[in-house]
Image (cartoon, rainbow, N blue to C red; front, side):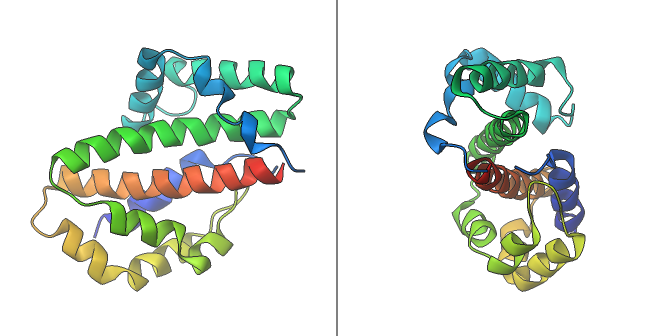
Length: 178
């Protein structure tokens, strides 16, 4: 099954530095500074595996750095906000595509953000590959049912979606703790 390597890869790509408590009220500041086209381009860059240093992603980083100066965030908070938004944008793009393909993603998204073992093993400064494999095993029936009869491209997109869901959740949690 392709889901486990995809989850691991997506999360590993989004790992940021650890973050003392930053007000979540300002977390949307970077997105407010961007146009819809810039948001879409940044999300598409990550979906396409262009990576966090792609110029389309850099606009999110620049907006987060401006918000950091304005709101007194640490550099770590800025990095976490960048990672949160870019992974969230990618997640939302994949959600639209996969929903249009007739896939109900709500059960998988719930499973990711409500799995205490997985969440305890993941943080903005670390990932536990074993925890991802264990998650996939615990939710094997859900994953197999969701992917049955789907093309490899759709399977890969579902795996990436799950990784982006987890990464955005972990980065938001890290930002709040910063």
